[in-house]
Image (cartoon, rainbow, N blue to C red; front, side):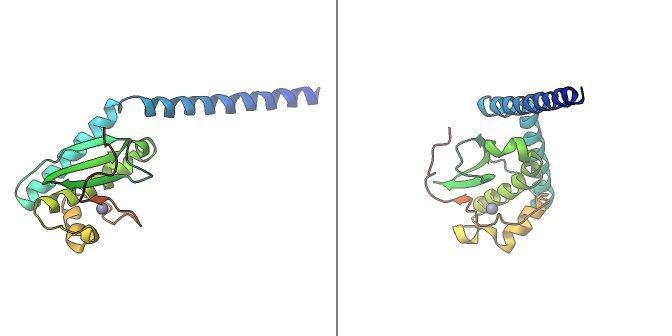
Length: 166
Ligand SMILES: [Zn+2]
């Protein structure tokens, strides 16, 4: 009798585990294969407005840079800023958004916006000087909560993008 109960217990445990796995799998599959859900787009938009208000307050003007959300960024990089023929573009990595959306909002958007702004002001002409003191200060002035460089990651691109964005 006890053995039967135990068997039943473990069987239900396995069923629960399998369904949790299934739901998680479905969620990440559907996130990956569908356009970014509206609530994510809304959060990105709101943060961008917040960054622009900081810019207005601390620099006296506001300039908006195009933000492209893409799953073509290689590896686990959160974001990139590219400067190509005078065009400045911010790219955000869709692949890490589902698990790291808060970080994306609070840190990555101001981080990349600071790179973009320094490109715009012609104060950044060198991939190595991307995370200078000036950049850090700019990132903080744009409301960044975590203005540190990403460890060992090159996310400023001054030449042709090494991958197709869309
Ligand atoms: Zn950076």
